[in-house]
Length: 277
Image (cartoon, rainbow, N blue to C red):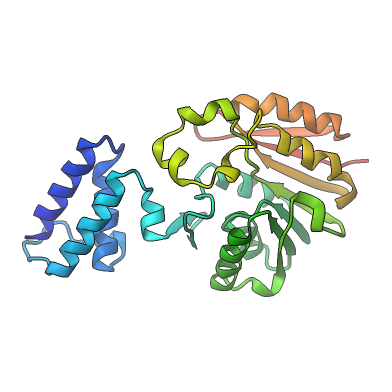
């Protein structure tokens, strides 16, 4: 079978089961099966594919048809112009989180703390962009810490980051001029409405607090002031429809200046709090 025929068949299979972007997913997985870059995938060739390539690709398509995310199948995700290794044990980075990174980079910083590091995409990007900075990343999940350490090595920032297993501030000492977090903010009652890709294949503790989706913000804000230097910044990613509630939690923690940044669809996505006193 030629590449074109294989790609057409795979696209049809994914379309039949309701995959939202079957053409794109089929192409990415074919590039992965061929072990070539997605951008280098030929689309107008009549060359036959090798049987082992067809078998490998067929396996990937069958897995995608079961709603396993593409990023889990190829074990990588592009984020802020860099590639991060991921797996089913860590939250798959989303494009909207790049808004948090952009907000953090609007001011310089020396010491950064990432609460809930996951794959490390936030803090490792910040350290790669801010060459004089160092920091600590924590996660309650041991597997996430391991994955973040691998990504730190890959992006050559391992000498400037300390990755620890910790439940928020439990294993943290010292102060930071930047604290960032993309905590679990989906309410328990919202979980059934998520796509199968998210609901069935993302780590649940990275998605929801099992309650109202606000408890992580409250837990962080109860202890954040003693770890934030005067003039430092606390930056959260938030659910658009919970933004005002998060702002209230931040104000009640003693922050006077709070800024909201929106995503490309004009939805509130990031809350920035400055510690001025």
